[in-house]
Amino acid sequence: MDKLVIEGGRQLRGEIAVSGSKNATLPIMAATLLAPGQYRLTRVPNLMDIRTMANVLRVIGAKVEQSGHSLLIDTSHANFPEAPYELVKTMRASFYVLGPLLARFRRARVSLPGGCAWGPRPVDLHLKGMEALGAALTLDEGYIVAEGQKLNGAKFFFPISSVGATGNVMMAAVLAEGETILENAAIEPEITALAEFLLQMGADIRGIGTTTLHIRGADSLQPIDAEMIPDRIEAGSFVAAVGVVGGEVELTGANPDHIHSVIHAANQAGIEISSRGHSLQIKANGRPAPLHLSTAPYPGFPTDLQAPFMALLSVANGNSSITDTIYTDRFAHVPELVRLGARINLVGNCALIEGVEELQGATVMSTDIRASVSLVLAGLRAQGRTEVLRVYHLDRGYEKIEAKLSKTGARIWREEGTL
Ligand code: UD1
Image 1 (cartoon, rainbow, N blue to C red):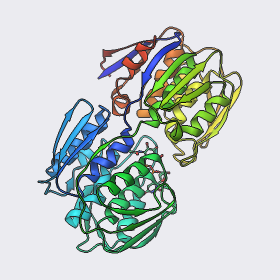
Image 2 (cartoon, protein in one colour):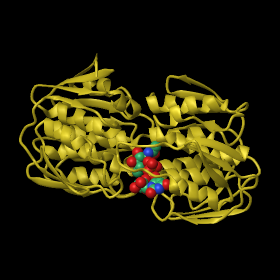
Image 3 (cartoon, rainbow, N blue to C red):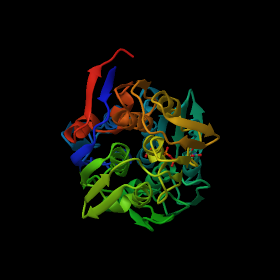
Image 4 (cartoon, rainbow, N blue to C red):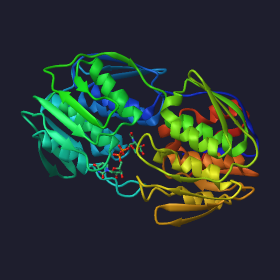
């Protein structure tokens, strides 16, 4: 297993190109199952999670070819509506195929994802939404078996705002008979991108970008080509990176509209950000100012940036707090940041962070995608050498992060590791 080695203490200067959004690409890949044919997706990030979803589609019988940042998907001969445990357990987003499989084949067998480093992550809302559309669900040896000879439009209220459940149920509803109304639907940009993709395929969806979606089922949909949106979480992670070590970076190919809450938080921490079209100029110097952050569904501060901002606030000039209201157990990075010299105490779902002047290099362990990036950020700031083990977590969600950071002056490289 590879590890990343970082020699900290260098400011970042230069340009970083933002990749396409992983979390928008994954449901869109699943959506290609809805209509047989050829799709070309461009600006697809080159990541492990994308390869995992490609393998899920291949099991189902689709052809998937990746060339650079393009994906050519042919779902003409998809005929095996099943997602196996071996793949779903490595990436929960594989569960996104449930809705499209059920809609196209009227039956599906999809493994339940199982445990997660962020604590319990149920999929009950995905299942309740499918049931509301008339699917019959049973559990068979860890797999959800869904049957729905006829899916009917229905009114469904999400008691909790859920990105995955909104996407999944929306994909089932676009081929159901009659109108589906989804209330308290997620409005994350990745869900909007999925809805727009479905619209281009011929789906009838109104209310895109709002919490109430009206979906009128179509008889059939058509394959299309589409470009993926910029990754707002990667962009926000680089904002935190500049804040933690200082410097001046131009982020290109970003969508500033998707990260208002992040820009606001960064500004409060003393990071200067100006945007010009799809570029963000980020400037930071000295220690960040302390912040009190709370995660919330979009347009609130994203839970996916909780860990990177914790690395930032670890060196703030005062005491900060971060409360995660979405994933209340998502704090596996805390003890690792503490190994680097951060002073963080957890009280329930709130991390109390006493800013320190310096961090010190150490060997630390990645536990999930965003936790890993927080360790990289802390390593960039720490004095001496930091080794981040189990970097495969990072490879799931950050394309060539070491190359992007070295290009801006960081000393960071990959080595073969043993753990
Ligand atoms: C997606 C993102 C993830 C991000 C999260 C929240 C992808 C591939 N992943 O995950 O990076 O952190 O949104 O922005 O896009 N919940 C239930 N029952 C369900 C589904 C969710 O109780 O059936 C709860 C979750 O436990 C959580 C909250 O709803 O507390 C939000 O989760 P959700 O938006 O569904 O996250 P994911 O789609 O899994």
